[in-house]
Length: 442
Image (cartoon, rainbow, N blue to C red; front, side, top):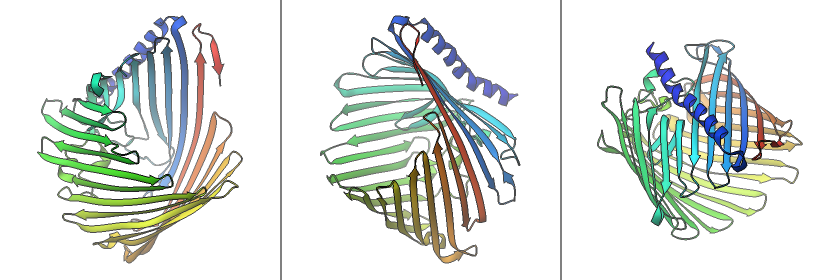
């Protein structure tokens, strides 16, 4: 009963936003409105086998709908909705053979001045330290002297197909961001969020700094630092700089440091669970990277990159190499890459080879991609791990596209694996003029 009540609570903001959006759109004077409606349907078919010999054949349906009313005074009202459903044609891919959820359903009002907006409903927030899906409200606006501010509050939501109920996160979340911007030179932002459990106790408390700078025309600097108030530790520092001395040459460098104990504390993302065997929460990771890309010829692209990883407890590793591609006049692209991973453990000592090719024939796109990993020593009796993927896409018209992928792989964890992916995408849109008569229908 509690689970049903939670679902109802999550759906209320989306349903309310739909009703409110309809009322606002219909109540707008027709002489001042320019209403457009669009949507997209993605039907996805997957097939794969598991290590315990199960055959999983889930079929997914993803539906997105958008409705926008642009007004003559520069303001506008928009409504966005997205939902998904799943049905299993063979063995159960989760504890239930069917599943579904509302990804987002929100109403946004854009004011004619100051980049101001008000949003209500189930929505995705990306404001500094906050990268969350919530049922709630979000408000933002710009002010004088390049100052901007935003606030949000609501209930945190997980809509992943295989999410465990224990990763639903805290019951109530709120936060905001303040920034100061010179559009040509920099943006500096300070942000914070707080997430409480249903009994009101502290669940997450994070603060952060984010920045973008352009000290020279050819130089861009981006970065962020995030702090965990509950664990009293820095979760992450991540900074990158790019330099383009010539239009055909781009250089880059980056630095990051992650403290997993602070970073993974009370996550609301199941994929990053600290109980996963891939994580050692007592580890710290520091990484330094550099890259260069060259496009001196119209059809040729060359790139080199390298990254050094340092771990406090599990040893160090370096990943470096290069890649390139060449485009032929008849819509054929071929390329490949060679990289080396040199680490302190056997799984991180290997050479990686990749070749790929793609060809466009009228409305069809054909792709083949092969990656081989050659380990210095056998891992679970496997010396060579590889994955081969073939893909075909066909565009029947502007509205209807289909795509199919067939993947065959072998690795130390799965001796032989076949995966099938099929997707059909259908889009539609309609626009109405102020008097309410269809202007165009495509």
